[in-house]
Every structure is written in C-alpha cells, then in structure tokens.
Amino acid sequence: MRKLLNTLFVLTEDSYLALEGENVLVLRDDDTLARFPLHTLEGIVYFGYKGASPALMGVCAKYGISLCFMTPRGRFLARVCGETRGNVLLRKRQYAVSENETESCLTARCFVAGKLHNSRWVLERATRDHPMRLDVERLKTASAAIAFGARAAMEAMSLDKLRGIEGEAAKQYFAVFDELLLQNKDSFFFKTRNRRPPTDNVNAMQSFVYAILANDCAAALEVVGLDPYVGFMHKDRPGRSSLALDLMEELRPCFADRFVVSCVNNRIVQPEHFEKRESGAVNMTDTGRKAFLAAYQERKRETITHPFLGEKLPWGLVPYVQSLLLARCLRGDLDAYPPFLWK
Image 1 (cartoon, rainbow, N blue to C red):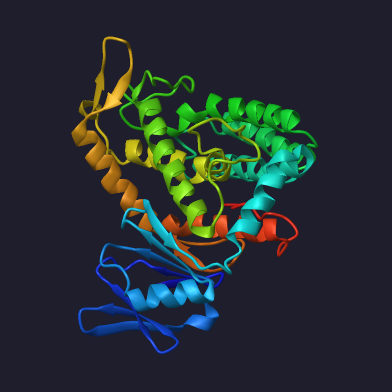
Image 2: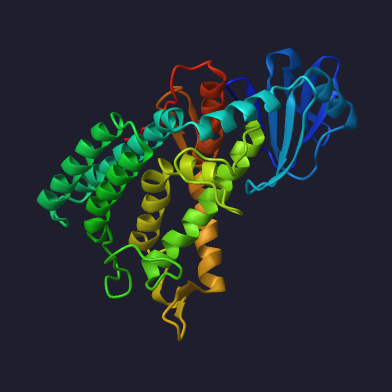
C-alpha cells in the first residue's frame, strides 16, 4: 500500500477492501493488512480482482471519494465516484485549457522540457556507466544541444514553436541512440525512428513499449478524473488519447527507451524473438512479447525517489502521481505542472 497526495494505492493483488466504521480496511484472507481513515483520503486506487465491499463503495460515493478498480497490470476497469466529486469541474477546466493555445502551451512546455531533460540524462548516464565503450564526445555534444532545447522549450509561447524545439531535440537524441546498444549489434541497431510499421528490431520494441506506456498513462488520467482524449500539445483526433500522449512524453526516454536498451544489453530479448514480414514490417513473436512483458512488469516494481515529492515509490506509480499533479495544477492548487525530472 502507498498513500500519495491523499490517494491510497493498494498494490496487493489478493487483498480485499472493506468498511469498518469510518475506516477502509485492506484485508487478505482473515488478516487486516492496513487501516486508513476515510476522511484523510481523496481517492483509492485498487490493483486486483477481489474488489471492495458494497458498503465501502456506497460510503465512497456518499463522501465523494473516488474509488478506482484496475487490473494488476494497470488496465483501467471502472471508477466509483459521488456527486460531490469535482470531476465535472475538473474536466470543464481541462477542456477550457485545451481550447486556449496560450494556456495549453504553458502546460505543454513543461511536458516537453521534462522530456528533453530526461533525454539528456539518459545520454549522460550512459557516458558515466560505459565510458570505454561509447563515443563520449559525441554523446556529450548531443546532450548539450538537448539541454539548450530544454531551456528554449520553457520560453516557447506557441505550440508550433514548442513542437519545432521538441522535434529538433529528438533528432539530436535519436542520432546517437545507437551508441547505447552494446550487444548483438548485427540484430539490434538503430538508424532512425520508424513506425507504422517498424522495420527493425529496436523500433519494434520501442513502438510496443510506447503503446503500453500510453495505455498506462491513459488509465492514470482516468483515475484522477481527467479525459485522456483531450490533450494540450497533441491535437484532438478520434480514437487517440492525446492527453495520455502528452503525459507520457517525459517518461519516454527515462522509462521506455532505457527499458529497451536494458532488454538489449542484458540479453532479455534475442534475435529469434522477432520476425520480418514480406512487407518489411518487423514484429515481436509471442515468445518475445512474453519475455518483454515479464521484464516490463519487473521494471515497474523497481523503486525510485520521486523528484518532486521526495518519496520512494515504484516506477509503475509514476504516471498516477504525475496525473494527480496535473489535476492539481488545473484546479489551481499548484502554480505550474511539475514534470518528472529524472537523473
């Protein structure tokens, strides 16, 4: 169990939530694992299948405590919330910001600055960890250019300008990304970012992990009451979770890309885990996806210290914390959205 920003995260899969007086109990079989006063909570996020008692769901609805049910892997299932919950006002504020380019840009540039900061530190950490196997000067040059872009992003006053800065920094980052791949270079190399469809093994993994991360971010936004389909930087498009794509930008380098690099360098994925079709598209095999997903779930359980909260939490909870911070920013509780700045 984790309590962050007045939200209780129940990660014990075989637990059951029940009501006792004015407290929520986390039970496993006949044992009480934890007890939390309801008046201290704004929301409860439960990862599992056993669920919660009808009495607890009723009290949460009555007092406006959002109760969200997720699969153990983080797929959103349902949310119980009462009439007094501020989700309607929150979403109205989200829609208003989305329609105002100036306000959208103020938030979107935090997403981009966070992404570029994290891109830079992916390269910097690589030069620290493998100085004898990398072209350190080349990576340092790219890192400096990306750092310049991060500063420029925080001064951008239009979305077009911001997208241009992000695109130029992405070119610098992906131009040296192949340097980070140290094993099986005949099969795992990176020349350029390609998709729809990916045409090499590394791009196939990136497309796969980006899709998973986007789903994780969409689920996190649903939990806090935001509409994942209405974004600030990514334009609205039917069927596209634009706000989830906004939110995941800062996590792409430090979580998704580093995970792909780890899978290659630690030999979690092998050349036989991929198949090339007649069209040139490269896909992961069923065996490859199983190995990849198992490693992904392990990575989500690894603990980090959140740079803004200063608290330790699993990687898998980062999208939820960032969604909570974004909701608080939109409500006016925070002066600006604090991006996830990794080192």
